Length: 529
Image 1 (cartoon, rainbow, N blue to C red):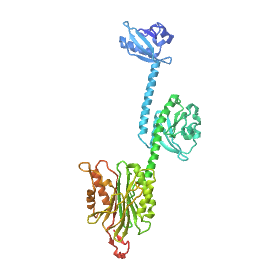
Image 2: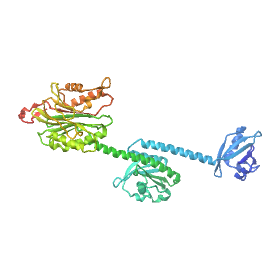
Image 3: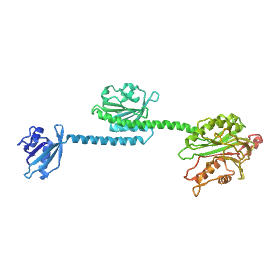
């Protein structure tokens, strides 16, 4: 036979050994006890086989012989002798073990990817990286992010412990390969790093024993390094093998990508928040006896900005008119919001000439025409000043729906100002109309997102001008903020969950007032709401 064969009787005495068997067991010969000339696991298996008194083929057993792995297949003959067929299983066992290790590593990388990608928080990604590395790759792990000024953000973790965050003021050059890893260079092999020279600051607090081996590998990011990963093993354990270092780099690649994505998200979020604060409409209040209230709803609920806007600029001198503007930029979303910001900034720069609405529109029109975009806007400009118990308005509409004047008795009047839109034609022309608000009257500036909102019982009917004016008529005598909330609620109920345009509304109110008789309330400004 091409493999070792041994025959032993019921008492465990060898009756026959072929040439391959004697090559494997040099002392095996007929007449000797199986336990004296082979290996213990085979002798035990023979004794068990005889004790069970079974005939024919039996259960396969396995064990090591001279650093090789063998499978022993028993066959019981009619006379009770047992024939043992030995087959070298070393290569198959190594292949199975390698496959099992690869399956475990693949499962670990999948688990790590899920854990890392479940958060776009940089500190959370660093915590997960350190904890996973300490549990599966080493006795301790240290994750170092790129320096923030003179400090290195660090997360360290011991196996079985929770991650610990810290900041180090250290020199990465003290650890071979660390400075290079933080710059994204390829890792230094662990055999080049002498654990004895590791600085004390590198070893996490609570690490028992001495460091036996160290791996330093970069955390690659998206175009820029995301940091470095340091793995530590105790001196009593096996050093990192080349395969383990390669696997550590695979893990580091996933961790670095997650950390880089988290850092990029944090930076973009910070930029977005700064820009958002500048693009969001302001909170309005009463200015110099004139009540201002406003409300805004973007076209998409998941967005906070869009193409509609409003602003109120108090007068620099008491008694002069405050300047208010409400507009609608063509388009929706971020691109429209960018142009909105440009228009608001331009109008803010033109405040010194707020007394001449036509001139402001001409300069704004020129600024929009000279820019790279092709968008346009409609605007309504209002200068409002308190005079006695009334509020005097100068209203200029540039291609925008006319303002609505709601009197204290519920009558709704449409403003007479008309004009061309801004940013589309070489010239922007508009008429300026003077209006007066008696105590309890209010003026409504709005965008067509309200009147053109589609919804209702059938789902496709526009809210319309008539329905909008009726709603305002029912708000007669209400404070400006209440009017804003009411029309916003009606519009929201009308559109439901369907699509809609941006909606912006501003209400300018002449508050009901009383004379302050104790101080001779006939002089200018001596009124209270």
